[in-house]
Length: 211
Image (cartoon, rainbow, N blue to C red; front, side):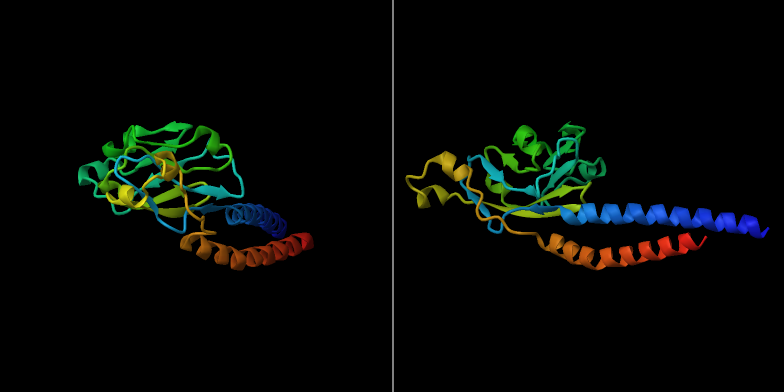
């Protein structure tokens, strides 16, 4: 009976060991990458094409990952929301998923296929209108990290930028911010969590060696 108990303890210790290894690895992976957006709003005139900057830092291949762009303050019909139609743009399974996108943004939003290879998940919006003004949120489920970019569509923007070519205005991305607030909280959390996991990892290893 004692032999069976000892064997069971060994199995449990081995299971705990590999679970902690996985948790440690996954925590380090998530803590390494962050989404960088823009610290200032993107300003455009009605009819402009704009790019809402967002990229993974450091470079990270996002071609086979899911990228969600949503608009937190966008009013979506309750029936559509129940069907999952709530995204400004949704990229998954290496393609655009229009079934869950808000109709007003279909054909107007896109990502760069080349940029995805390097973690550039910036959203391009064509022919912006006043209704497009507001906060946009980019989220990558695999990394469990997000960033927000604010768009301001100003009908007077043309008169205040006389002589500025339209394509220059469209591609202005402003100064990037280091991290969003949510990422900052995650970074501090990882600093606290990783040492704890390492401590338990070492404790389990020492306990396993006794057996």
